[in-house]
Image (cartoon, rainbow, N blue to C red; front, side, top):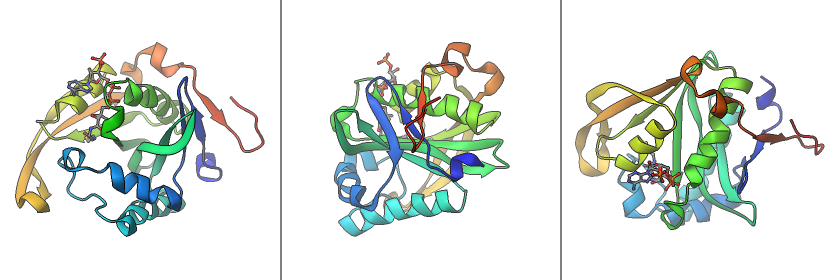
Length: 200
Ligand SMILES: CC(C)(COP(=O)(O)OP(=O)(O)OC[C@H]1O[C@@H](n2cnc3c(N)ncnc32)[C@H](O)[C@@H]1OP(=O)(O)O)[C@@H](O)C(=O)NCCC(=O)NCCS
């Protein structure tokens, strides 16, 4: 797969989505406040674990298991969130994941990032299905996905063990199929920058 040969940098109106670097670890660890962390079973609590977060996704990319972009503003190279696909199944379907620093919520940033990542998934990776698993109380994430056309497919009861709450929690499964995707989203103006500087 060519996107595993050269990391695809995606560009939108306000954002550059680029490969994560070890030096992003401390910024990522800092934005994982308790408010954000409540939606995760694990999150980086120390600088070393922040680098571990980056290592996890670098390894996943090297082993062609996942691809995770660091979200940066065009005006600043600092990573303010991440987004990407994991659990590729024959590069035909995958799980979507993301998080954004609390400081940048409600500015349309994740929506803008997903408008680049989703067409990349359907057009470049050639997937037919993108899935997401969301806690029922995560209203922001559910609404974000539904706004982009994802459909709720069901509730997996007591599906995910959350160690820090010592509880098995329900998960809503949502998915977007390529054929259901809004054509305007599929053909959105997203540029993939190549190392030589060319774009498509
Ligand atoms: C979910 C998250 C990524 C949303 O990021 P964001 O950049 O603030 O979202 P956007 O501004 O792009 O919002 C897009 C749409 O999502 C919905 N939305 C976003 N935040 C919302 C909130 N707090 N409550 C209800 N709906 C919300 C709205 O429909 C919004 O569209 P609108 O502004 O036209 O109404 C962010 O809240 C986050 O990082 N949460 C914690 C981590 C997390 O939940 N990750 C996903 C785990 S499944």
